[in-house]
Length: 207
Ligand SMILES: C[S@@+](CC[C@H](N)C(=O)[O-])C[C@H]1O[C@@H](n2cnc3c(N)ncnc32)[C@H](O)[C@@H]1O
Image (cartoon, rainbow, N blue to C red):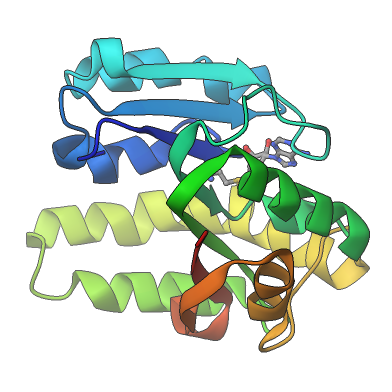
């Protein structure tokens, strides 16, 4: 990022976040992706190549529910987008947030988003489609509507919805993510629902 620090993407998948951050990763900024599955990690370097971020990007296979392989106060920002909720036990999620706290530098930022227990896969797709209005060309919208979104819905989002309903993954109640993060000591700078109520987002700062 801008202060020559490391950004940790915890549960990075294939590193989608990189595409959003590419223009903000300065030549000194560094991105470290962690995920339990090697498949997503294998996509990090090719994605970084496409974005001309070669030297700035690395990945390491890690189980977030264990101690992170990082020194205390070594990263500037932790992003955890739709990853911590895969731990159904509160004590395990708390241990993850404590680890994020440990590895963050003072004034470091945690940005975390997880599904709510109102998670609705079809509504997410509807909202995404609405958000394209006026922003992409007609053929691009058609391609997203009839190819990309149906695949996303049936191969990804419906699976998440099923896991949440079964209780194997955790859907958050309103305020619950805020409290989990605040209890570790973070000062909450932002707490809101996102994705049409299907997600909750919390931004916390380590004092
Ligand atoms: C829904 S995907 C989100 C990926 C990415 N953050 C994104 O927003 O595109 C959840 C990711 O969390 C990872 N994950 C789940 N449990 C994990 C754990 N215990 N340790 C590390 N990664 C985990 C999964 O392998 C998967 O890549």
